[in-house]
Amino acid sequence: MAWMRMPLFTSCPRYPLPPGPAGYPLVGILPSLRRHSLYVLTDAVRQYGDVVGLRLGPRLAYLLSHPAHIAYVLQTQQRYYRHSPLVITGCKF
Image 1: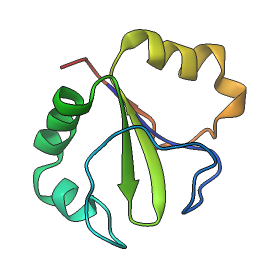
Image 2: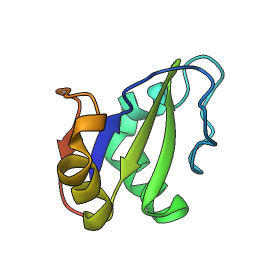
Image 3: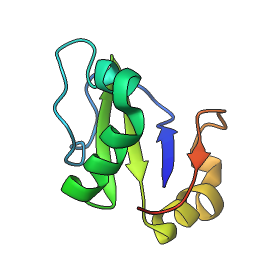
Image 4: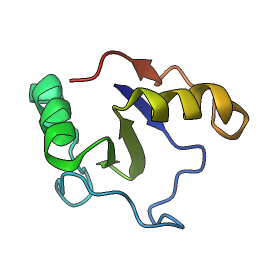
């Protein structure tokens, strides 16, 4: 599973956000992540698939769980993404 922020953060994405948990206005899913982060992320992958759109307050993020998607972003297209300490990799659930 990979967690990453997109390079250009806006409240309104240029493209539709992939399906994901709705969250709350203004704070998105941050309260849920703070209390039960592992459960929220694994449940999102089970419910919405390999690419999950997440609203983290005013920020947008994608949760990638398929190894091919992770390799594409981190290796093939790395120059288009911000190098950030918020990229976390792990195993697929």
